[in-house]
Length: 272
Image (tube, rainbow, N blue to C red):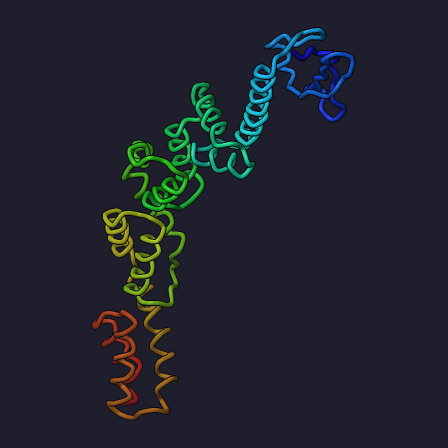
């Protein structure tokens, strides 16, 4: 049986200790442990250790070092269980030890997927213009279970989603838009859906956006687009064919017929 002959503080880390052993007259380096393990097991000079005890101490120290890495990883922000597991795997921690560490972190309240998901949702709502479907996708990627995602997303109410989407729409639209209202709304709808807002929220937001559209803004847009088409087609066609090309071009750009007819009346009837 080996006996502890000397315990020395390591030069590079004052919280780690090298344990030297002897089995007779020859001293050799045995293993190293963290200060917490040294104190817990009351390791001291002259203490006898069998091989199984040394292996147990070495395993405990290895887990402790990996646990300390996990704490450091958590010091930056909250983590999901999957994030922690992937991090420890990347650090080449033994799979058995990962399971032990994650279980310990959960017991200590340092790892909780529901709390993580709720905090994640609240941060996304406060700091981004993302909708709930996009946030759901992010949480799935972080390994959060579907029932937990549902509970966390309940914090993102319909009213919150509506106000968030409406605020984004108002920011994107301008009073002197150079596209038809229809094309503007189509682009906004696509963007809102890509951001992860639900179709019912998008429908309500675009309804308000349409109702708030000023007639002058739509007229400015059709004049801008119509004059571009006039310059484009004035050398390609004449008479009614020229007028029809301009009309068709404006229709494809999403302008309503009453605006198109008014534009043609004011800008082309004097010419054709």
